[in-house]
Length: 403
Image (cartoon, rainbow, N blue to C red; front, side, top):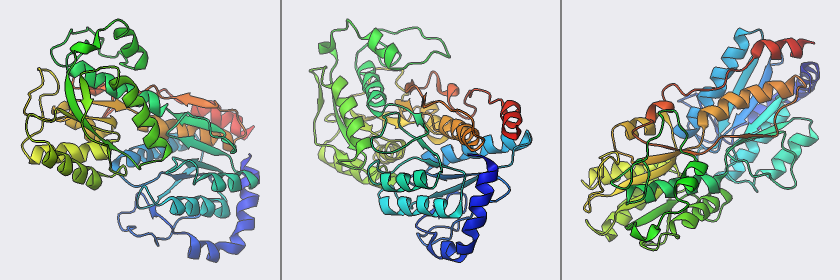
């Protein structure tokens, strides 16, 4: 889609600007601390720029990280002669499915060039994606690689959620007696820049007797019954269930990907299982994991050794998924034993690149795989504050965009 077409579409949309401003609001602008209710006005597309409408499912630190890198890439593009604007709006919470649909509809009406979505729910967002397709606006989907049926997606940037949860499960096995980089099991030498991804773990555990690994744990899942939560539960259990002496001792509690809900779930588990009765909590997302960490610390039960020593029977270790600047610092401090990296920086970095390429009529990869991998105290510097990201050739993109 060319910028010329975009300007035409935006001009046509201006006749309904007042309607847009009235309707545009089922969400908050991520960078505006005053925009805290679902009625906050959104932004309209700049007719002179390549405009990306970005909507994550909530405004937590996880998605703020992705937003930061959307904007960093846009700034870099602008330094090379491309006028790129990122509009960022989200629902207030991860369960406001209808609000995210409304945000996408507003982006369509206001005439953005490309829409980037991290869906709160994959099924709920499909009608809005269909509307974008009908309007000729390409969609980039981040946060998953699983191809979605019945909708047209220009590019997927993300990871396999089932695979990511498997990586987390191997970290648990490692800490409680298996080979790897944690606990007192067989220690494996890994390079400072080596990816502890699923291939690494599966190769390492190919001939391991898992019966020697013993632990009792609980799970904080996301939004019960939704795609992301089910995929992560499936992956985690697929690995953990192979170890007959690693037991999940309670039904998962849904934390809705939310820190406060993660705190509540952890309080429930710690009240049910006293010291010596619970070894670990796996929280399926960063926000819930940070809630678990803070609660266990407050109760004096947090394993804050960083996994470098054998687990203490009286303490509870926290494992989680995502990796943000905040949780990376917690890993450095030993408060989170291990976390699986999902690539939020990459989402924003490649999200802006691919969106600009699409707006310029250029090809983009159908899939950009962010390999889920273990972050732990020994490799935390690989992740934040300065993640290593592939350089984007903005000069080449600018030259082809102007051609």
